[in-house]
Image (cartoon, rainbow, N blue to C red; front, side):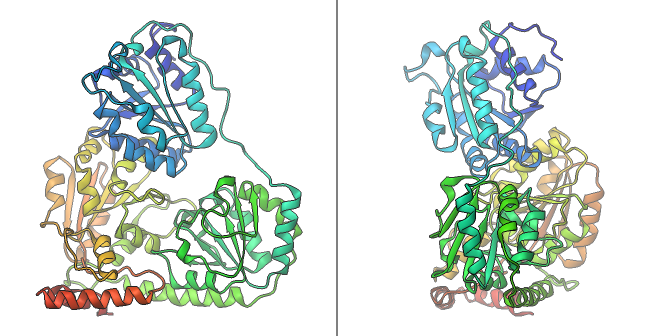
Length: 578
């Protein structure tokens, strides 16, 4: 497998350990403290250096690959500023619970502690976004410390960071590469029988049960649906649970939260028992009060973190439901029927908004998203930026069991979609990968459009160009604050992409959407569609508080008084046309 003999240099053993663990690529930006490492990658078969233009993108790309593959992935940064750039992407990886190894190169070991050029302390800096962060300061520590880091990342599905001075990488190794000896995290974890009995007793005594399900149900779709049938329980999902549970699901009544649906909100508020499955849904204001709560989660530290619980079960959803469901009695309840009926009404109203009138601009983002969903491949991978693209993705992208939906759903960082797509497309070269990028998000790490061309990755980047930080503006309006510091000067991202040698389209009216999408999806290389969408399109939460309503009224009054009445008029035209 390898061209070099074992025990050559530490960097060779480093690379060979990665190879034995199945790592196929490392994302990063080359630098002098990484020279020994990149040279070892160059001279070994089976592993590639995936050059990006910014280290933050390297971490996002590693996270994207890990989310699509489920396997350990790797990113690297050179000393000082190089590895510091990794930190935001690593925070996203860590909070998404994906196994990523980050290699943080360090200044020469003899200079450490002298305030040397580019000296930082990554072993302290990365503690907040990793479960393992240690320094390798001698050749004798390799590969044992490296293996511990990799095993930690795999077993805990987390970020592990190894800090190593560049000069150590070029020294002679004292031991060969080793096999990790593990294939992945635990396949099943069961709560104690007494806890299962307590949960069953409470569920059997409950009349109206609602299920809130998340990404922890990824491998338990069959078991979750069987449970819903027994309990006659409507099912709502957190955003990360959408791709696993939304499709072909007679119990599904929508997503909850700020980007959710009124039907989901009502199903949760109307129940007398809430059953949480594999979710750490963060918004405490959406949890009902005065009800019973049962929570099942593989990570015990997450139990009761968001709302008071009556029974907490530490276990994976699949095997816990195997043990729990036989203890339950079949329920009869109109709760499910009422919730589904309400969801169908809400779904119809949402679909009626996803239309485009020929010649009328700007384009409604609902229509653009529906067209993306309708025309994309059956097994497409969608990646959405934080902000309004996440809202439209949640409401209008249809899942089918083959498609994937990836975003920064826990960390909530801008600029995630296109960088993550680099890792997804690198791992799945023949799969259609589509980003729903905001104009704010894409511009934040715009330089890595060049990476798509550099690596010949056929990602389809669709920019929702509304000329502003749209979601931030909505938050300001809801708070009664005039919009400020959110507007962008008009930007043609299609021209920018074309200048970078990437095929691009500018779309300004609804009738241009479908032809552009078809051409872009058929294009064999990277492609960009710059779609001008309505800036004032409101993506309202499932329930509006009195404070929010008052905030909107206050915003409109301030705008009129300060001569910004055109904004109020545009908002009315955009949202009252229905």
